Length: 213
Image 1 (cartoon, rainbow, N blue to C red):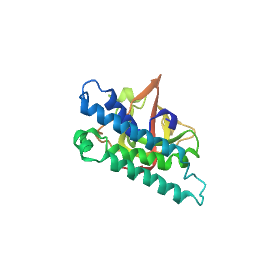
Image 2 (cartoon, rainbow, N blue to C red):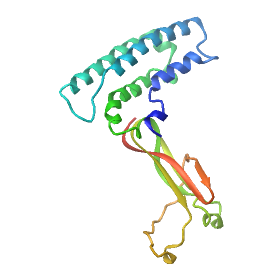
Image 3 (cartoon, rainbow, N blue to C red):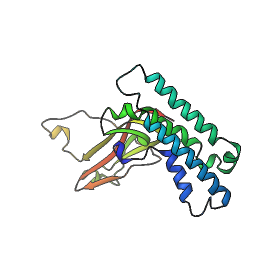
Image 4 (cartoon, rainbow, N blue to C red):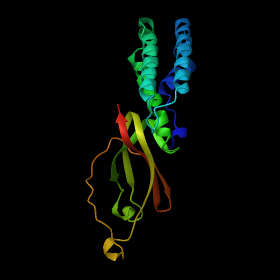
């Protein structure tokens, strides 16, 4: 999944969900507060987009740009952390906590963009482990029944991997045998979904290079 396929603006998305919620935040006070926050958010968002850098090529202005981004964050957080907003939107709403996640995107977006459109940045469910859970031995001979366990992270810089698995001829019968690897069976908490075509199953998962939680 490339940078264009996911929404790294987690705070803006959180705010939009509250604005469009038809059950909650429909009282006059909530609507008033959301309108005020939206105005400040749009200014914070636009100001960060106007700033360019740091990039993969260091410059003398990098420290200044970082300082400007931190100042923008501090000003917006001071506004959002006012008591009346904190009481209306508590920690369960994730409105306040999602600000830092979006700030990390602004901080690294230009650097990561230099590596190409396939670069992964933002919230992600990343690769944790791989298991093989065939319902019975005869089925394992047809396809591996691989399962990719994932772990949630608030912010990731990495890459998205597409991997295909299929049952193969045993090494002793293969002219080009590979290395035998022993897998330890465990009970995972969650699995990825696989696309199956014939006896080939394809998995899509993220590999992190940098993780910030």
